[in-house]
Image (cartoon, rainbow over all chains, first blue to last red; front, side, top):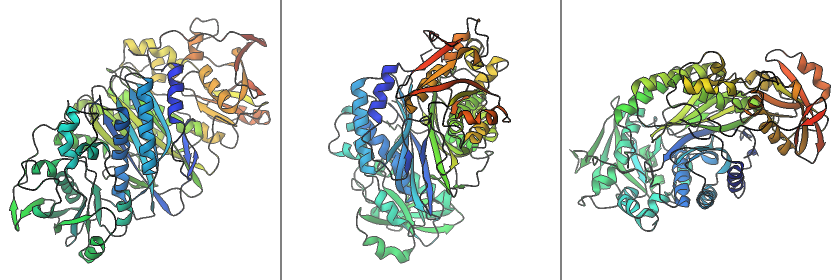
Length: 317
Length: 317
């Protein structure tokens, strides 16, 4: 059995690291340090919330630099807000640590502050506990104008299917991340610093009929939209903006790999021009919503169905 | 390295267990199943939030029955809402599991549903991950009328110090919990089913000047109020309602042991009669707030300072 309570010195250390330097939301009445945080709801807004966990050697290499671990953890959590079209408000952090190394904590909190700053997320509170393995759970929240949250369930037959940015870069980075976890250059940058599509998500409210962020892989996540909306989707294999061309053996990884945190969404065909001309992350029209009442995803090449590329047997992260 | 993704069958299992039977809050617009949950803020209310983690063999015996683990985890998390005087709204669950045993999950979700029902907390969303050790992080939230949240920082010289219920029962239960983790009778009931003081917390808004729930131990938590309010507290050793009398060798454990989740609060002396006559959990007046500007806690016996009983060296949980 382990001692539940961290020694007082460790408490002070942790408090020092997490008690300053984070962006302060104007909605926050009481932040870190009491039994709870307190926020004042924004008028005419709904509150959008999610919780996301990352486990050492499951979601990231345990020996990765602590600031990179923090960057990735907060960005992945915040991506759920982008998927709903929300404006970020703040987060609570639950940190389970095998030990409380001062240098590690300094690096982790620095990475967390930098990510929080980039994402405009206030640190509202947290809990630090001792455990056998590093586990990071982050609950995030943000505002949407009442009734405008984007969900997975609104896709309608006739809608176009769209995706933002390029798909597969983070998945292709995995060998590099596993070999040299401290290197965040090249492909690994997409892995550690996913480009959370918060502005795009907000721009899509009132336009997209369904939306989600790609965390499991494009094909898997398209199936989530199909199921939630009870529609079928047809995707044009050659229209999907993948990190490698479709004759590259790694193409299947791009379609099945997660971690890019781009947005996958559906929108009425009438908005085609509006979406094509939108500022920011480039958008690609990759297919259409077909039958209502079923929930399949079909990949087409030259208008003919092709087998879905198989997920490789063993996913490292 | 482990596979990040739980097999599809496990996903279904978990979704089935957590997708029904929880109390539905009227504020909840969208619950479990999308990228985020969505709630509609209650007019003229602030939102009070906290996150709480429990780790197997740190905060509870790993081999305890899953329903008891769930009961305790949600109740301990909800206690932070009681400390702020909040009305419960809902929670998000981050569950890290070494494996996905169907029976264990059925038991855990049953315990969670029963606790959620008793506490009127809606399950809004969650994340289930694989890890070496069972880790449960729960973010809870509730409403208070704008500006009325109870904090640790409002105690003023002249205030009385109060505590609810009896202190030390859960701490004294630890030997039994460690030996027979499945037995929740007798003392162990206080450990697994802490009586979260939600009605009392709500009744104290507008009355208490500072409030917190006792999770670290009465003396430690009194020091938290002293520090946050920048006042000193004098506690009358013989007025503290402990589970054993002060000549019992376990008396020190009662003062230093956490886990009772009773409320410790301060209130103006003018409210003495009101508080003494309040319905519900009995309240004991155990001391007073003295000097402003310092932050000590003194234990008195017959008006003479006595040494603070020492925390026993090794806390099992």
